[in-house]
Length: 199
Length: 195
Length: 178
Image (cartoon, rainbow over all chains, first blue to last red):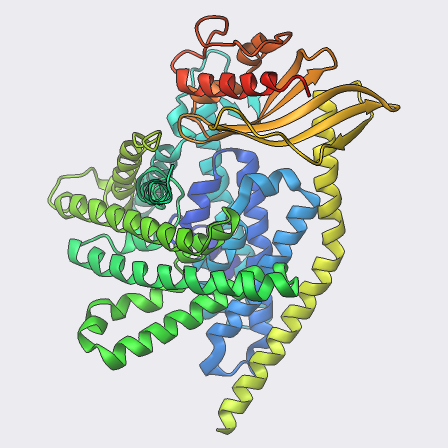
């Protein structure tokens, strides 16, 4: 049980896929224009991430080592397509907002990286913990960026005005704001880590 | 507008106005990882151009001559990614066999390209925009030129950044992203260029 | 050789299962997706012409006189067989993107309502063309003589985007003999 939590926590801070490992950034930067989109993208990502980890770890005994990569790709692509179909059927508005970034989950380096680097070497329970941990890490990073950009860019959070007199700077909803927002998050995380390690 | 003019606009808008890195946020992993030196950026740019054009052509035929007639559009993502993975493997083998020099120059980048989301992204966008074969090729060329430009721009700034005095917690990736944001701001200026 | 066969079979098996699972999901979701699309279109048209209960798409759309404007679809709104108006889907190139808009005309060929369907103009400037302040100026107009700064106030800082909308609306009004 202790191991389970160790792997779960690992993905949230120490190996946060977005802010520390610096992979899978494309969807994070592109979709984080509003908090709502960020949450939608985070959930779609988590679905694929967790199921891919579960499947790869449970299929471990029957996957021949030499052709493991193509098999990972097929597994991930299958779950991505399922998510794509489900969102397009039940959440058409979200589907429009996320656009091409739903099918692109398949080439998200995080998922294939965890399949190869973690799930292929660990059992089902540990892989589940890792999948959930990485997903939470991804979600908090993308939602935090969404918060920064939506608030600074349009002055709202989840479409609600927070401070009346605040004059938003549109540039934060535009592409440059995404780069600045993620730089800010990374800087803050680094600063916090330095404070902690100095103690 | 004649055909050539249309293609030129498509090319310029793919390279500058809708720059794949700064406006569409694709291919950020190689953008950050491969932009440390100008030379490395050029190698990566060449490899991406090569694979992107080939992938656009092959997926065009796969989509319109296999998936559409068989009514299997929902297999699009899975089919495209497999095509790209196989293509990259093939290209790697062919280059290694026939041109050791070229292999030395771009070989190490090739395996990284399978998970480069720009390749899959461009093949999907080609379908979304309804490009024909020639448009798809021109679009792929424009996008990869835009990618190479972005890479070289960032690499040349990063080469200088390595000598600058940067506050402690902005060092490393944060300052790279702030630079990228400033470059993106510049690229916003290209909006409206095509008209 | 034996290995090659094993690899091939394993890959085929996995791809087969994947295709099966996807076919099943597709079967389940496809009807809902198709339904969503129809409902979305209907809701949009209802919003344009609230009086209509039924919409019929015209099979032949006229060619645009202005070569920069494209006429995509025309719907006739009916309320128990009597025509209450038409909805036009047109598009034209603005400053940095193609602007798609819906224009609703009443039976006496006056503009009832305008809605911008999609655009990617400059955020904060060109995107203001989607606001009521700008679009409501067109309501009630019926002659194709609209011009920016003459009888239409453009969005400040976005004359090109505003002129594009005016161009598209003039084109619709030009066809009001339909």
